[in-house]
Length: 94
View 1 (tube, rainbow, N blue to C red):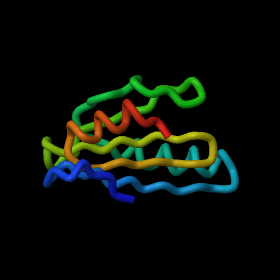
View 2 (cartoon, rainbow, N blue to C red):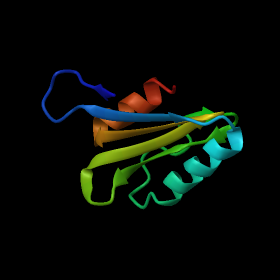
View 3 (cartoon, rainbow, N blue to C red):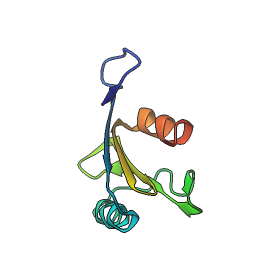
View 4 (cartoon, one colour):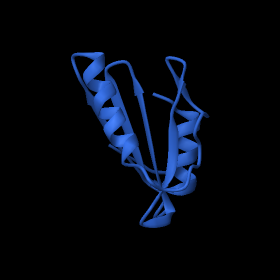
């Protein structure tokens, strides 16, 4: 899905996937977050099942960010402009 305010370059792409088992979703979440190497932007701002999740800058482009979080069997990944991702991630924790 893509979310946008209509401003060029401010859209957010949201990828959502669901597994039948919580352990499988946790494994995918661990793989995605383990591969995130950018500067920490929002770790701990959103908690899922008591665990802090995080947002980081895109290591290839400091003006963009990646946020990953999970909710039991669902994993969410938002990418886009840094300010837009931070705002989306903090205000709409799916």
